[in-house]
Image (tube, rainbow, N blue to C red; front, side, top):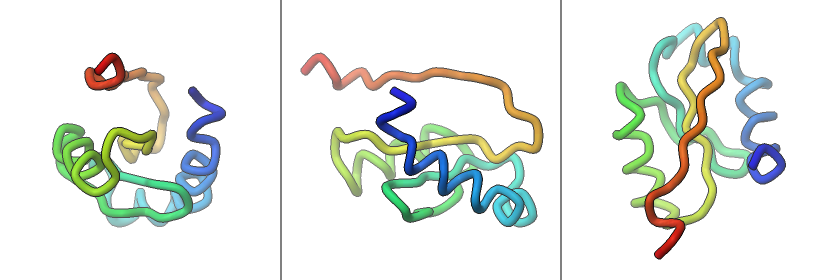
Length: 79
């Protein structure tokens, strides 16, 4: 899974300090090399991801200084 989102994770790391400065604690939506927006809840970010891109991989990550690993999978993958 990490290889699938490698580009998105690189974009997050490259822009992390800027994201922390203006949206710490929020959830960022990143697809390919584009930061789409930051949202108050992970559900809002995931919903926007599905609305804009469909059932394809995209990154939703909480903007935090200290990382806590979490994993989520789509309920739509088996459909």
